Length: 197
Image (cartoon, rainbow, N blue to C red; front, side, top):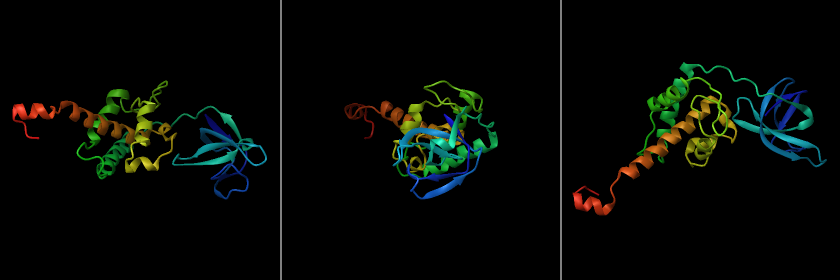
């Protein structure tokens, strides 16, 4: 769900009017809600929102915003998407936890081409709108993976196409690891066939 601010609003780290503000957004700004709600010391409702472009979240009084339809995401720029895939390739492969099942930008791009023609496409749950037809569980698995890159993202950042590249890359790594394990003969078979351990 999305919310549109009705007035100049301070974004706070906790749902309290006494909490220090760390950002201020103006009237008319539309933000996605994370689904978390709370009440302040006076019993007034607060909502947790993603601050555009979606890297940080914060709390605002519900009374400062009205619920609106989710905004249509702008068309994805293919050049920016390819650059993002290359960036994710380099950044994730620098994480020691990835070796030896590295990710490759070419395969990430190929998945997007196969699934959607590399466009932001609407999918119904359990898939999420974006260039991959990504499953919600793929995003959750990426965030729970313990990879260095996963620490930068919030639970609802999957609504943006560019962060989805990380989840697609994580799936590629996980599938590569699983395939390698599946194709490896058991130790007893190695001794019988002369395959080095």
